[in-house]
Image (tube, rainbow over all chains, first blue to last red; front, side, top):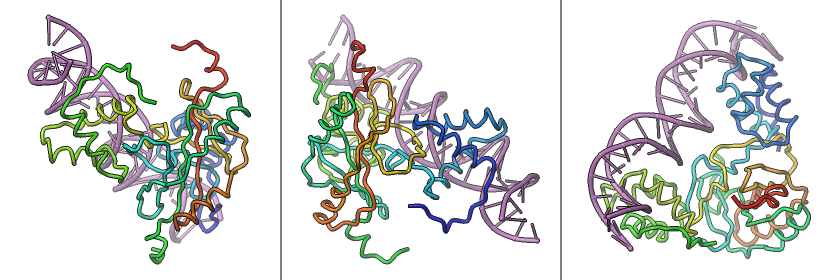
Length: 135
Length: 135
DNA sequence: ATAAATGCAAAACTTTTGCACCCGA
DNA sequence: TCGGGTGCAAAAGTTTTGCATTTAT
């Protein structure tokens, strides 16, 4: 997961950003992190926060929770089903796998939450991109 | 899933939007749909496409695939784990459930794709919002 | 008739980027 | 030194919204 081939420098800004994210379990947005960092380092810029979040993600130090995809996509297939997103070509493909509703029940029982639905997304290389030589 | 209490009118625009989405399995973006609709109805506006996609989603006629959340959220917990998002208060909570890697293998075997990882998100009402009276 | 829906354009919002300067290794 | 990083501000890109007008019921 961690990619140590990346050339990076240790900067105060990056350190604080990661510290703050590690000190919470709120799954905050970039803007929330920005406001928190500003309390310790008022001059930091929002661009720096965004840049570092991307770098830290590429380094494997944190996870970005949008599950891939800057903008919404729509699907008229309203039967419960899963999706596969190709990390190379970006295609989204329906997966013909029965939905495991027992997972919902297990989680609901364990947490006490009321589960309306769950969604599962797979990420990797589709058939065509798997064959193609690495870019 | 479908909400028939919504008061909606049948308009040409909404009909075409749904037709186009039903005619493809590409999981298109709003902009892609907009361009397609314009071929049949050149004067339609992008705002109308967005408005109708939201309405059709609320009606249960289509699914929005961003899995809840317009902007990215970040998590320093890099162990594989699941998330629960409360549909009422918006909170995201880590779920302590072992990740089922055999699912990846089953899907990889069935599709021939190379699965790098998968992510699962649960949606519903958290403990506190479950108790609260409906708004 | 009347309230939902539309078209248009401006605005809101998140995220990215160009550039000159700074600083860590 | 030198190239990665920063701050600032402008720009890009998606999505929302205000408003006058149209239109389905």
